[in-house]
Image (tube, rainbow, N blue to C red; front, side, top):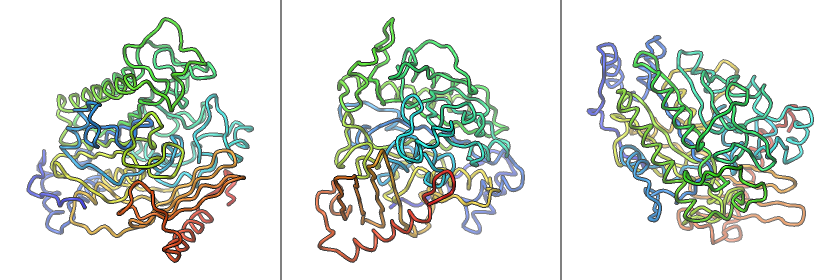
Length: 479
């Protein structure tokens, strides 16, 4: 479990802030200090947020998560300065669902059409998504309240620079979801130098419109993020969402530029067959540029007041290293959904902390809302826990159930985790399999316990069925 917070390490930068923190410490509510500042309209006391999201990064693809042939010194240092989340999960087994859950702070199943990644060129990949695509409605609707909108309305400067993948039509563009500054790849993956996807669609956008540029996309996204940070001040809090496309295919390193776009039939588009040296070069370059982001925070004096979060949008492909987990992207086995997670908040989260609390992407959303003091006004609630508050305090973790569902075509993956027990289902027209695993004894999911522990199996299966029947909706609000 996480280590406790050293309350003496808390630093302040103004008399008002010192007084507020002292008051909270008296009542043992240090993690609520920033919320108190926000409620009093004091923007100076609210932390900044930088959320960095990798794309298809495997659980074991970083040095700090056990990989020795990839050098990731900046992410390793980030982990050593904060907490390493060893039981962190993506909300979805693919990218679109996780991104929807992060922005809304709720299971993506409430929205409809976003249980599966939107297909290249704006393709719906299962029944509800197909229906929505036919009416040009496949994406994150502007009337879905997002953390970006809440922060923007409360006085934060907001930016997304990187991968969007939440709708191709302009009405779904990120500037409709609370982002002041936008620079993004509209779809799931594109040529890193020429910005074309596998159907020759152009993917580089700003404010809902295609734009021209030159350079390696990992660099472009980072440079845009640094420009945003350079424009900030210590008086106004900011929220930077930096979702990279790395190491998603096509597999192109920073030195692989060619005069012509990558052929549409190039094997480099194959997600499960990356040249190992290219895969390594992509991740190491992303780590190098993340180091530039961290250096920018230091240079402007933002680091101590900024919560930096890093994760991946889903488990790794067959090109990744998911060890010691089984399965890959697209499945609800551990390798498809468990991902590296890191949080740094100087003075609040102890360095070299490790937490085994099971957590989901939208827990970051809940933490951002709690620490910024923003409140929903749509009659809904954030479904995650305040994971930052959890790992930076002595509070006992109450436990909960985590759920996953992913449909593509007629194939459906399901899962629920409760404590160390996990129910997994894979269902297709000609195949159906169900499993029960005890992850505390079997992280690789090799021993199926459904026969040995029938009561646990039925209990978790029933819990999943209840969650699905109450949460999953198509865009018309029907179960």
